[in-house]
Amino acid sequence: MPFALSSSRRLLVAGLLGMLAVPALAAPRVTAEKIIGTPQQMRQAALIGSAEAQYNLGVMYYNGDGVVRNRQKAAEWFTRAANQGMARAQYNLGALYASGIGVKRDFRVANTWFRMAADQNYAPALYALGMAYFDGKGIAQDPVRAAELIERAAEIGSAAAQNNLGLMYDQGIGLRQNKRKAADWYEKAANQGMAEAQFNLAQMYFLGDGVSKNRQKAAMWMERASNQGYAKAMRHLGDMYLNGDGVPQDAVRARDLYLRAGAASVE
Image 1 (cartoon, one colour):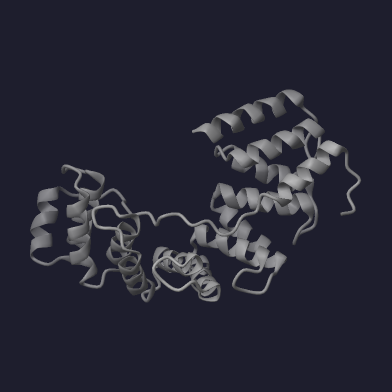
Image 2: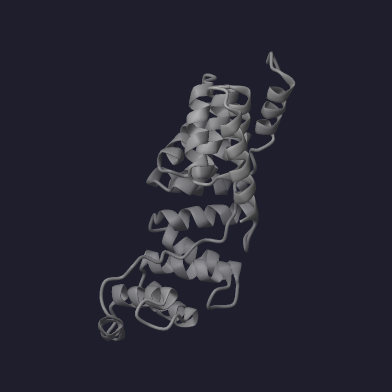
């Protein structure tokens, strides 16, 4: 690699090259927004068949908002709303099955509900089903199908999908490798405030991978990810300050970032 770097800078480049991982799989999270209204009001409407009220009551039981938290009851109410075709409820029910919260863990059942919601173009479900195909959770592993679903979620605006689609383009997983597209998708997620995407984009600017090399932009995105407590970004930004690479050399700032990174890694 044609870099004329000090040994410490070469270590930084090697570290950056080794940090990109395969798309990250995490258990899908229940969409648990704050609900306006009392449990009594929701229950009355839910019992006479309102899918919206059933969903809201499920959220209340999931969060413990105005009722004693009960994940089993949350699952019951999500099921009622899901059976009426509500995409949000179908996704939430899938997330419960994927996580084993309130129900027995069952990836196949989770994927059935994700698919129903995905058929309605519900972005979280498209992403969750795509990641199930990527990881082979309850379904045959299929990176190509995973990329298709994740791209649909990314186009709708899911930051997690945008970041993972960037990783798939970056590494040529499930689709043809394209570093420029990788950087574009990282940037979309980074602009939504996703720390991992900000870090990934920073690496591309640091190395000139898919974009023109720009250490100042690399530092800017590392800083944004660091400000969100992203330990990898703190460590690499610390290296940049230690070496004066893209930022003014500042050993004190570097030390502070290393300490913060260490504390964040322990949490």
